[in-house]
Structures are given as structure tokens and as C-alpha cells.
Image (cartoon, rainbow, N blue to C red; front, side, top):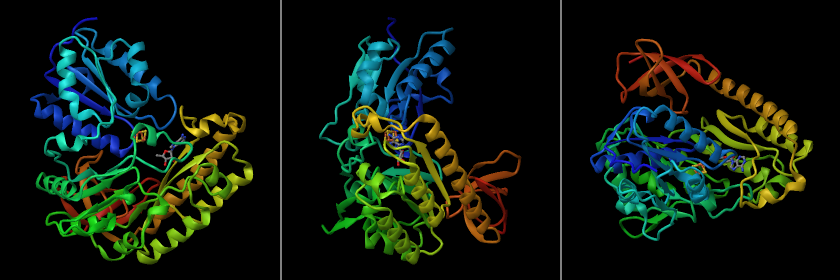
Length: 443
Ligand code: 5AD
Ligand code: SF4
């Protein structure tokens, strides 16, 4: 094996959820603080970090094929240093490194603050593996935020103690932890100083966040949101992902009276049948979910609801699936994600092999659910036509003169404007597409 040279450039490729995107940014900031420069593509980098996701099938296979592609594309020069990070690294890193000799570094999601030392070790010819979950939080050792886009993620909570029977997160991300109040507020201020106008608070169970404020009073996520609301320069606050059981009265009230808290709620229910919800260990019922949505809608009538769904959980019958469709039909979603159940190694549901649902049945259910959800998304978009809203511009659109931004309901709005990314403009929504809307600038 060739000894990789000390890298001067790097590229971080993130898969999966927004928390992974956040971790990817922080790894980038860490490497930049070491004097390394980011490249636009993996092919040009001396160090490639594959920040992987383990939530659904074929995660490891995707990493192998990515490594193969990188090695092939860079054949003309020396192989770049390759680091596998994220949840696949946590779950299967050492096995993967044994199989793929091109892997120089394996680093788990709770250990990536040690990446610079690992890179140094790899440059000396030693493969470096670290999938510890150290007691000292990585957040204490990361550099100040240099994120320079109008919309930023901020991880406030990590891990999960809920142990849904299908899910790997409690194993890959560890136990639930909340970042301390002061640390979150400092990071928010740094993001705003660097140009963020919107902050999305992230956590696998973000609404379970808890911490003590400056006065020593214990606060929930709503308290944190109210404090962020007072920060000058911040225009929008969002949070994701939430669990229905942690939608407290305080958080629901914040939706009624914190103007900067955007009218959007991603609140996964997963399934509509109580029998399946029980087997999933969700610890809520379809009805208790309906009641949460009713309370939220009472507080903020125009709130856009989003969710996650799994079809074909072991033992799911046609009748169970019909319950999911009825729940979806009742709720009405502005957007949603839906997946076929995929057995994850080490999770309780993966052992229910006798009850596995046939692939064709899952395909058919997924197709029916997705077509219903697509109709709902289109209908939601159509319902916003004629409204004039604030649009936070994020990036140029496909055509010259076009920009794409976000409405308060997280719709992508395509609009003609000379204003740059980061500007908040007023626009009337004039046309609804299936996944985006068109706006006309009014200011
Ligand atoms: N199979 C299919 N989908 C899953 N999700 C989590 N674990 C699995 C699995 N084993 C989905 C859930 C979750 C989202 C992030 O991914 O819907 O909310
Ligand atoms: Fe993937 Fe879940 Fe890990 Fe996010 S937390 S990277 S979705 S496995």
C-alpha cells in the first residue's frame, strides 16, 4: 500500500440526513482550520471524506462503489487519502476497512473532532480508526463556524433513547444528549455573524432538547427558540426532526406567538395502524398523533405538515396499510418522505424474518402512498397561489435572472430577481408545480 502524502486539499461528500450535512460542514471547517483547502469535486482532492448514512439498505455497498469510482478517476495520480465517516463508519467501519484497502481512515460521528490527528497518522502510513463515543463532546473541540450561506443548520441534540424497533440511530449516534444552552447560543451568534438569516435546529429528537438557561432555569426547545428569537440579525427559525410524544404545550405555543418560528413541522408518524405502531415501539397511537396535529393547527392554522412513513414493516397487512393511507388522507401533507422497510443489522425488527413483507407488496404500497403524498403536496402548493410571502433567496435558478429561495412553508420558490442569495424579498406565488412554486417579486 502506498503511503498517502500529507493532504493539502480535501472534499467532503455527505449522504443522508441534515445532521450528516451539518457534520460534513463541521469536518470541512476543521480541515480548513488546519490550513487545507476545499475542492469542488472529489477527483481533485488529496483527501476525500465520505460522510455516510446507514439508515437504509446497501449503505456499505454504496461506499465501496464510491471508493472504486474515486480510485479509478484519480488513477493518473496518486490515490487520494480516503476517510469513511458517518453512521456506516460507526456501524461497519472496521469490517469495511478490512475489505477495502483503499480506506485510510474510519471515523464515527462522535469522534470526528479527532480527524486532523487521524489525517496526520494516515500521512505517516498508519491507518487510523476511531469509532469511540467519547464522554467529552466533540463540540468542545470544533473551531468557530465559518458557514457563509443564508440558511444554516445547527445541531442542538443528538442521539436517541426511543429505540424504535426498525432504527439504527440509537446504535450509530448513541444516547440522547442535548448541547448546553450557552454553546448553542454562541454557535447561533457565530452563524449570524457569518451571514446566516435562517437557522434550522437539528436533532434526531430535537424536541426532546433540554438545558439550563443563563439564569439556571431548565428550558425545553421552546425556551431556546424564544431566546433565538431575540437575536438581532436572525429572521427565521426552524427545527427538525421531532417525535410526536415530545410536542410539549410550550413548543406548540411557540408556534402561535414566535413570529420567526416558521410555519412548518416535520413530525414523522411512520404508520397509521396502532398494531404496527406498537410493533415499531413508537409509543404513540394514530389517534394521539391526530390530536397533536390538531393542537398544532389550532396554534398555527397555516402550518405546513411534513412526515416520514415506512411501508412494509414486518407483519404489515393490507388493512394496516389502509390505516396509513386514511391517516395520510386526513392529515394533508405539504411534503413527506416515504420508504420501504429495510432490515437494519442489530435492530429488533430485523429478527422478525417470518413476518417480512414481500418486495412486490412493498413496491405496490410505496407507489400508492407516494402518489397520494404527491397529490397532497401539489394541492398544498396550489393553496398558496395568490399569497404574497417572504422568500429567503438561496441560490441561482436554472435560467438567467432566476433565483430559488424558500417560502415560510419551506416550498422552493423560483422567482426572477436581481437580488442576491441572502436577500429576503416579497413575492406573490403565481403558479404551483408538484414540488416547487413560481413567484413574482413585489419588492
Ligand atoms: N427502514 C426504512 N425506513 C427507515 N427509516 C428509519 N429506519 C428505517 C428502516 N429500517 C426512515 C424513518 C425515519 C427516516 C429518517 O428514515 O421513516 O423517520
Ligand atoms: Fe443516516 Fe440516520 Fe445516521 Fe442521519 S442519523 S446519517 S439518517 S443513519
